[in-house]
Image (cartoon, rainbow, N blue to C red; front, side):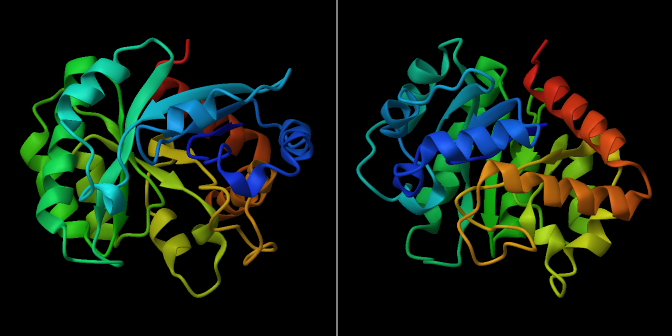
Length: 253
């Protein structure tokens, strides 16, 4: 399995990182993709190693940090993102939940991330919270046939999900799909399995039965089990489909 969105480099894992990664490997995780929060994230990612897990780096500015002193975001994305080790641009996106004071800066940052992703021919990873319509409008504006990526932590309506698919996005499915009253499972059940990828967003959003605890990559098996149940297929087939989807999107061949 491929965890397509995991902040395994954050301090929450510092004390027991080896054990966390061993559990991930035992649960079948072969690859962990690490979205950046800011340009300093790369240094934290450099410390990671495990004999049975491949780590893949991204570069980007989280929307909650888009209003800060980041300098010329576009040129830095192109410079840092051109390295072969950078597999995607992000995470970027919009977040109106915490603050609407910097919406203009967030939207401009999102556009610059999309432009860099197209120039570098790499996927863009999209964070969205209380901002769906604006997010999809900007993706539509930026889509010229070259943009591809993931709506991370998908939690939209059926209409929004189909619009995202029409715009060339994959849907990142994490722990929220296991939450009993969230309703995400009913929407995801109507989406095509060949456009879904698995993720944890660890250390955040742990799935049931570990909801409320620190999330970790090994918990992704609970999300995979939920998808298998929803689509009426085996866990092995769920793993095969979602892994192939991730390999296709990120060109891991």
